[in-house]
Length: 239
Image (cartoon, rainbow, N blue to C red; front, side, top):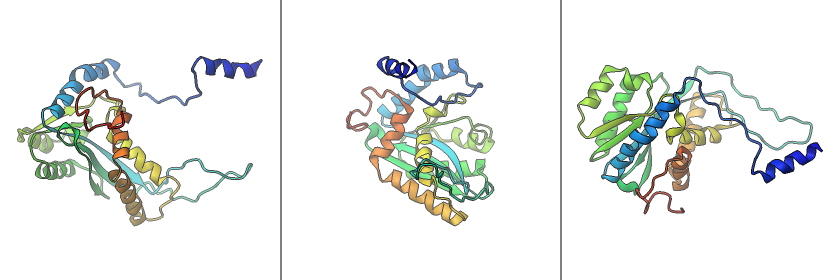
């Protein structure tokens, strides 16, 4: 009987799941090399008293994300939202892990203009001014990171800054992606009608994550790294 199929699959430890989208451009061998060669170097930096910084960029528009809600049967809920993709708030964000994982912090720089290499340069300068000691920076291969001569020249001139690139088309390895997911969840169905309202909502969402150690640790857990003994006294206290 068709209904017995569901019970059979449950007994086999199967569940109904939505597939995760994986880009066809992704190089699985490159990902494996990063996990076995680069990631251990990143973890080593944290163990050797360096500050670990995961960095990423994200843009938010007036087009509100949607999420499910309760409503009477047969009455699909509706929400009026802007369809304006042009008014945007662009963020440079970083999850900062202090040496040996004692502290987790969020650093945010925002702009209503398209982000450029100059914005990245300004962010890096402020970060180096604010954080003492060696820094291990991990980010993706975005053009404003790797194809801007000013940025690369500045990195080369900073002996205490060590930079690692994430594998291409593998955003799930950047914990900041999960911070953006938390912000998007907070924005869902809020339907901002002005850029000022969007700024306020994004600020509230960032502050909510910033104030919660649990939410920040969830970002690291989302990246699904095995930290082993590194910072075991501080990171993931509940484990």
